[in-house]
Image (cartoon, rainbow, N blue to C red; front, side):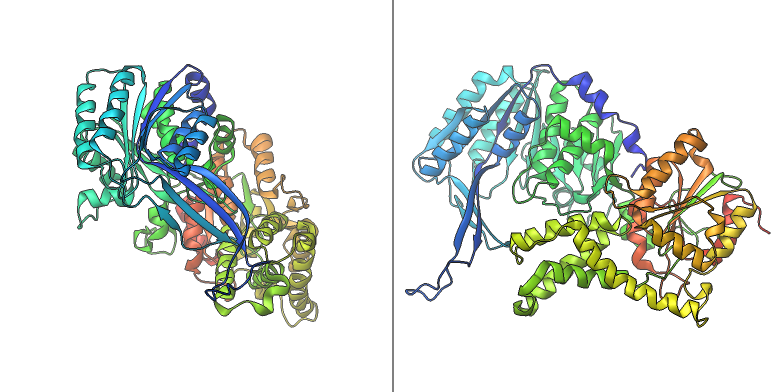
Length: 639
């Protein structure tokens, strides 16, 4: 992925330039209703008749799904008129679905009520303490009648010339898209091809090959199925092949890794995915992407601008849990300006794609243009220089497990406990490097999410941090006492070569900064204890318990504004976590990732490679004993 792509498209300008003019969009497809039930076994009984556990329903929420959800997204993004076409049953759920569409201001003249051979598509989703139970679906045996198809198409033909864009949605196994409907709809598309004012888009699970004369939005798996069972080409090659196959522009979505768009001139545009530290929910993200893409094209945006907006819309949707998100222009502007991007996913996921400099362990992800000593060097602390906190992950895992499970801990099944541990481990991996207090705010959300602890007993983020810090500092103090007793020295609790490297850079005029997500007083005390505080002087920054003021972001912002004057090549950032890598990348600074093994204090820990590359690392080294290779590569004088 293009590491600085987010700086090439100003989303405020795109929206300001294009949004606001009236646009009309039609969506043709599978009309679905989602019914979400939040349940508990509290106040529920074992059925006398069946012997089965019953559930108490805490809350039931209806929401529009399928083509209906795409329609709502288009309306929320500012489309003046949104018409929907599809079939519902003559049942209560059909009434509810149409009522919800009207609530959102969506026109339903094209919605046909079919009495026979059709039950409204309804997905009953049951959640218990954040865990989804098996789903119950209705409408899996539907068959559209010829009369329903004719009535629907008649309305479409009457209104077609008034649309800026038409979306074809195909989602369910037995829905609107019978062979008869496919044939007629293709005739409509062909007859309207001379009308340049209407752009056709297709978003299909199984019928991408049927509606060929459209702009296709499809995911990687769908694309590879079209290519064939032996598809081993890269994502970029696949997107280009699909464009040539359809003879139309293509937008290929890559799940968490973003998207690729190929326009009419076969120019490839790449968009990185977005990293989220907190919980996400992928349901509806594809619909949000599609709506953003189509609305932007209808405004008059280019395909690359529209795909970028679609990518951000999907990100906004991901943050909405247990229901589909409906992005607004305000939300997509906000996310675009502060998003943490996921860089080079194919390199991150495959160690075989690593490129090394000469015969050294220095991995080059993005070639550097730096020549000569940097003016400024910023260092992360824990895992980059110090290993006093080695083992913090295990302490945090147990602390979080205790907080989430509460008094239910002893009664959890081994399966429930293992699942909870896996979720906590994944959370810690996603949030490594951010401030502890920020992690604790997410922990509060997780405690509420699982529901083992009564709401009145849930602690604050500050209180959870105090409990965690108490356990962590007990571990750190044991090592500190060993140092003070003379049984350990600085070389036993620092990454190999780190102190010598600090001395080396400082002696050549580089100004050194230490930035950590750990509390600032602890960082200063430990740096002084281990003998390298002098190289940073008063330039040591740590957490002060304010989530909005991340120390790494603040330091980089300060340096950019006061010292670098826009010349990012004169600053390098060292760290073993993705946070500092992303901040460096955001500002065009050189990002050097440490694959540090904190137990041995030297050598490679390849578990860190994936998140460092995704975070935007340009270069990777195991530890600072390889500083000579790094110095030679960057053109620094070595003494």
